Amino acid sequence: MAQQTLEIEGPAGTISGVVSDPPRAIDRGRTLFICHGLPLSRDGASTASRLLPELAERVAQEAGWRAVAVSFRGIGDSKGSFSASGWLEDLNAVLDAELGDRRGYSIAGFGFGGAIALRQAANDERARGVVALATPSKLQKWCGDATNFLNACKHAGVIGTADKVDADALRDDVIALDPCGAMAAIPPRRILVIHGSVDTTVPESSARDLVDAAQGHAELRIIQGAGHWLRADPRMVATLLGWLDR
Image (cartoon, rainbow, N blue to C red; front, side):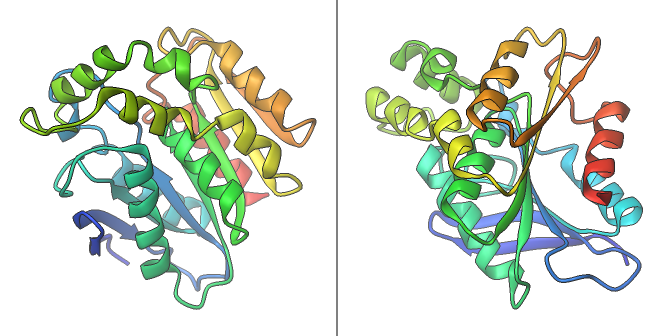
């Protein structure tokens, strides 16, 4: 079946995305939601979710899972401006609209999207498994100075330059996701952590922090020679598809 576009009315406006259905019948619970990261480079809002439709299609065709990839507020064609709690609201709007009578789902997130995925899984018993890819474990350090973080978000286009946003509140909202705390709440459900060995944006130690927080209940895969941008790395794709097959 061809990939379908997705438009859902969320709390801040339209949430856009894609849905890829597998060629064979869908088993209940075999739905993967894929979360993009938070771009902090110039005009990154327009490209942050660009490669996810291709990944969703591979998940559907090769693993036989239904795959849903969305652009949260401030990204791509989705309306609104970034906030961590806002992205969780958007994710839950998509989950409620797309799950229907399916009994469960799994979720994967890249970079900051991994922190969103971990917090969602910790809060939602319907989540059966979670994959965190190149995800920061210490969001206070990852954000840095509150004003600089806000300026980076505006620079990337995920927050409008004219929007009145309190820098400290924005940063505190991000830090409240607490990836390690979320990790501790997810077992015995399945957890996979994937990280590049030469990631200069989020150090490899973050992956090990997350795994340690799961107290032996998370799998760790370090991709040798890989950097932060794992979305198109064929080794990441193979690792993810293998995990879904199991």
